[in-house]
Every structure is written in C-alpha cells, then in structure tokens.
Length: 50
Image (cartoon, rainbow, N blue to C red):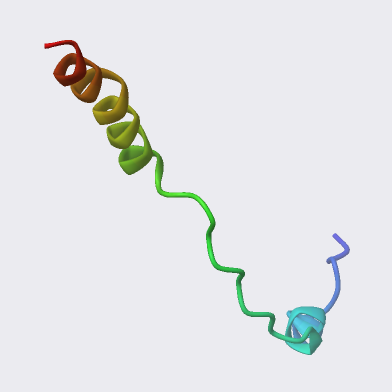
C-alpha cells in the first residue's frame, strides 16, 4: 500500500506558517449574555412595574 508522504515531511507547512495572535473577543460568553438579558427583561421590568 502506498503511504501519504514520508514521516520526515510531517508538519512542514504548519511549522513554516507565522504565528498570529488571536483577536480579542468582542462578545460575552453565552451564559453571561443570557443572564444579563434575563436581568434586563424580567427583573428590571418587574421592578419598574411595581
């Protein structure tokens, strides 16, 4: 059976690619975002009504 290239060439391209730092995330994680929506919609609305 033929192989898909030799082991000496493994990872060649990835090692040559320059490392780029990840961009900072703009949004909150979903759990926090949903909690803030809940507070704004349910709790503050109930407080404003009473």
